[in-house]
Length: 170
Image (cartoon, rainbow, N blue to C red; front, side, top):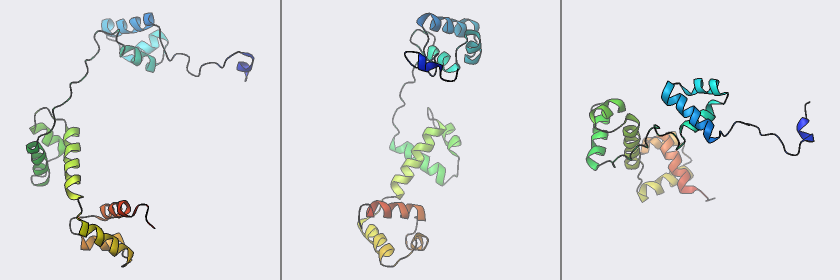
């Protein structure tokens, strides 16, 4: 009984209920829309997995499915400056900043604030890059020691920049 599939022409499917027929999909959709059942409840009633039910509810056959979100408008320079100012000077959380800004989510504001901050703070001049390589190679200093010579930087950022500068060199 352990290896019954050897006698069959093909191996059995690992998950036999991955797809549902269009009639089954329509039935699941009607259970959702008419009886307001949750996917887990629909799965129990139909004997299908919740994955199949969720896939069926996303089907184009479901006319009451949620419409696709419209793309958000791009951030302006004023908004970028406002995010950084509110975060650094006023000490607000990203959720508080998003509450002040219209049509912006906390995650979007956090991503934008972090991206702008990283892009501004990680720009190195050629002199700084050469000095970093020289200190690490000639001076045999650790990144913790080099941090003292680069104000506004941390050891992780210096380590990553050094790695990118010396990548492929011996």
